[in-house]
Length: 318
Image 1 (tube, one colour):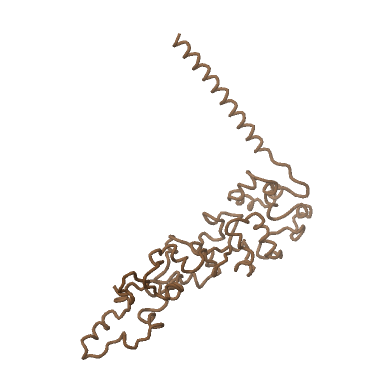
Image 2 (cartoon, rainbow, N blue to C red):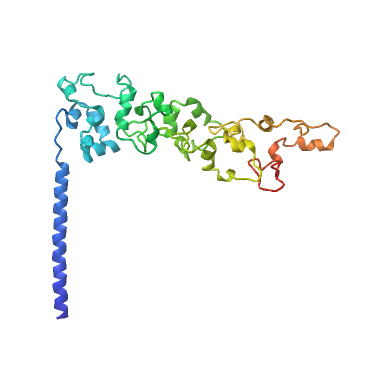
């Protein structure tokens, strides 16, 4: 009897599993059919397939992008289901006019598009409103009429991430910030060229409440995000370090060691006068002059220049 009951139970479980599997398959097929069925085109719009009939190349590139896959296949709301017309505006008048340019008020986002930059950007910011874009209004880029399409390209996959207009962040930013990009080619530089960080590691191009579009509250906080050992607090603090790291360092690149703005010891001498502690030999007859000949760098002795916690470290010596 035990074996018979076990066999009957197994049969019941198997039958139930088959029913569930059939329901899942049938439900999946029904869902797939519902997704495959094209949504009705709202009144006043032409529909993405109508756009495709003339703009085949652009449509083929767009449907392979992240936004294209979302708008054309997995739209989450009515606006996204409009496809091409979600951003370009209604194309019905454009189609009725035989594809004539400048008809119907469509936004082409081309370089010769007469649509004001502010209106073009509103198309993007109507959806992209969260995160760092909260500070776009009044930001350095927005106030200088920089268009979203100056940095981003949504119709074609050019970059691996963020739909950039260039393959990398440094190339995208460098198309306008030529001087900063050139500084990255100097001998002492941040590891942007090596791909270990990007411009957006420190800056937020969509706007911030801080100077220079910095992500952190200040230049020092930005540097301390990586260089935590320089943060302190120290028993003896070096005034320039407290004020700004950029007093001595150029974060975008330098031909001096450690990205210093001026070579040592001249960098130190911009604040510290040479009287009573010269950095040149006293004279050939004085034995003590040798220590000012070899090295001649302030940090040879004052090595804890960013700050010292030693009770006798007021001079930032070893």
